[in-house]
Image 1 (cartoon, rainbow, N blue to C red):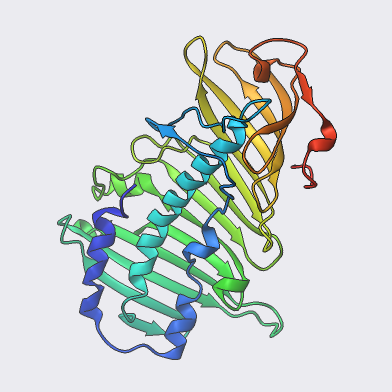
Image 2 (cartoon, rainbow, N blue to C red; image 1 turned 180 degrees about the horizontal axis):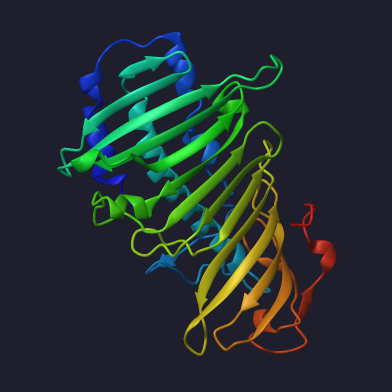
Length: 329
């Protein structure tokens, strides 16, 4: 995924609304998410990760007695893909931070509307509104929307990105946003690398651990390699975390196996995971694994036999070799 397409480039025309910033303007901008709010930070450990054709390739260190933890190696690739999707969103949001608002309301700021010079007949505006609670001890809530429309016939503006935020600053609050790729396509403002479907993101930096939840609500062909799934991440300041994700792996007999992983990990990448399998053959089941910082398996308990090439029983290593991390949800 390269950039937020020409839609984001068009927002450079915000420079037409030149002026100066006020302290109050900055408070509105603090409601918009940053990369740090939404990123998934999975430790690389000492494992060598090789990717080929967008799929997991052989990547286990040579001295892995029980084999490499493919499920954990895939976590790094999945987190990179999630962060690429986050970068698409933030690339759009960041452009607003470059220029002062066009209009100021007592509890709101508006940028635009501006003509989309890349897509004639369309225009864009950005609105951030603040809701101040009656209780002075309650947090302030902000709602924002990046909107677009066809100018002909004074069509109503439609959100292409909308969200809310609660908290004093983005670094200590929580919020969510939705990115409506289909609306971009329907308005005739899409580019070759614009994804399809919808992406929802929720985040919370007001508590420990920091959490990010990303849901793809429709298939994402082309530039978004993630599968339709609810991805969930929790990260502690000391580097520990939890990660629930899905990845696909070529099946030995052809087709694709799909694995859903709930993993908990230490700061060095060692961890344990519970894995649900939906094999290309039609077989299903669950198993668990533990791995060290080099992504080498240290324990396998697999009633499906998947981790042992189909051989049963598939119980290897020692359970007490699992790192001292909390079991994943």
